[in-house]
Length: 362
Image 1 (tube, rainbow, N blue to C red):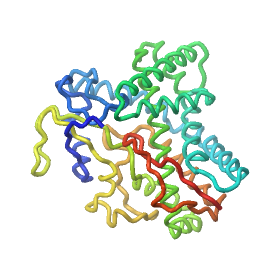
Image 2: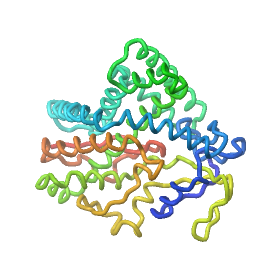
Image 3: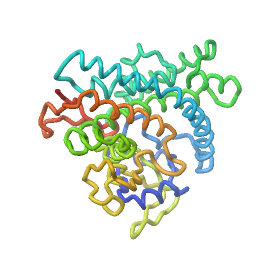
Image 4: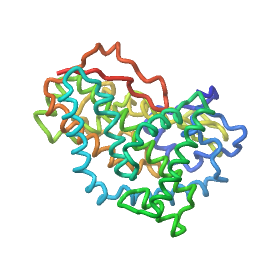
């Protein structure tokens, strides 16, 4: 990490308030002196080009309006059978290979990449390059390597957008190329949006599938409850989303004016990190927060953000999780963890998080 100081928020009510506060932005009022919490080019917003809150808000609103169309109910309905088919194929391949298996490599990593390639219109054959670039771009320490990887992604996206301009299809990149043709978007904006969708739609879901599977494997009563009562699947997905245990802790926002939160004053220019893992385990908002309860209601987790900062791809993530946990233990009812929990290796990248592997057998 970068080593600069930042305020960390772990209470749900304070997080919601700050998400909604116009004085907290991704742009720093004095970029040259902005405290940085990561060297990752993907998340370091200290040098964003917005001059003030209004221009940042307007720019985000315009991009959000376009992205919302890409994640429309119609497009999600079209993707649903494709996602379920991807899960079915991956689980069939795992069964054919036989135990033991690594659930990260067999399911958690390939599924989101398949889905996001389908949505964007990116050739799946290029997934190896994207995975390597994404991991390098998320590196919180090697700023130079992170920026080089991000430049590689941007260069590749530029080629794809040009290709889609000539040969359009029913995918997000074609929509972005058309928006550029009409003047609704600048090429750099389209490229940034495509890169953001690729990373956010892939890396985050990979991690949530891993943690969700681990929670299910280590809570057999909850797993059996879901097998007995399929109506619990939606609430199980929400609890899996809440109980993510690592990743996503390096996104800084900056105070453009003094903000008083309780007995603390966040000074103008200070960095603020809203720790969603801490927020989602706030004992004031979640009774017995460390308990994995697939019937938990209400479940006001902020995994997808809040207010104008809520993730536009949240419904896609939910579709993937419902497909995974609707099939995994039906196809593998005797699935069990093939290594002690305390021997599982956590990915030490705080931007990405997750597990290095999740060995299972049946």
